[in-house]
Amino acid sequence: MKAGEDFDYPLLVATLILVGIGLMELFSASAAYAYIYHKGDLYYFLKRQLLWLGPGFIFLWLASRFNYQKYQIISRFLPLFIIILLCAVFIPGIGKPTRGVHRLIGLGPITFTPSEFTKLGLIIYLAFSLVRKKEKMQSYISGSLPYFITLGVISVLVMIEPDLGSALIIAVLAFILLYAGGARISHLVYTVILALIPLSFSIFKMGYQKIRILGFLRPELDPQGMGFHPRHLKISIGSGGLWGLGPGQGKEKLFYLPAPHTDSIFAVIGEELG
Image 1 (cartoon, rainbow, N blue to C red):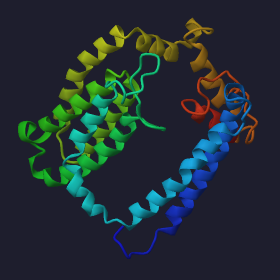
Image 2 (cartoon, helix red, strand yellow):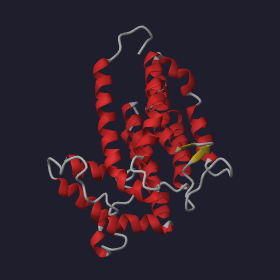
Image 3 (cartoon, rainbow, N blue to C red):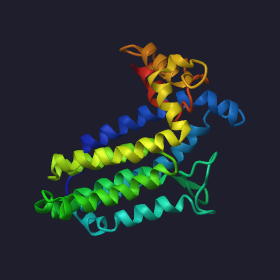
């Protein structure tokens, strides 16, 4: 919003409600894990989240006072900044590899995932850029192609971290915005078909990706191996039913789900809140 305009209080109330639900479910999902792996401190992850809640609301207020049209000034440089961040995860001393995976950047006590910033940054860049180039979007060479090249570079960098899931999310977001911005459907379809070739090669080359896909599609083939986590994700969501078992009453978070406080928290919420 522009400075001086009235604050959007319904949006603020909705944000506070979501934050409250998030904190409640984070504690529920993480307490057992924190007790085992962080010296009996049930509140370990909750305290870390609360630590960043204050700065988060400060930035929220500052952003609400800032005229969003001014983001257009920095939007031109976002693709370059995104590419630099995605490359930085491979630089020793800056990137923080975990089990051979390069997804984190560490700056002192602060760590963050560039691929998450990429999703927001790409939305801002495309939103402003497509408005300026709307008249050219019917042309493949001067309209869609530069965006496809930029998206291709970013997607490849994310895939070699490796993080296929984030790469697919980024691609889907970009294609939706390109379609809304006036790109021809035929251009999008041709590009998807071409992208499927290296994507298929990547999936079959990276054995773990193939295993995860098979585990998701056919968990019954190996219920105690590759199908264990997908099976328990379904059990968690299914056992909650329509109304849920109640806050804190979920069972699958007790070391049946992988990373219940992060990757699998959606399943925990489904089990407890329905």
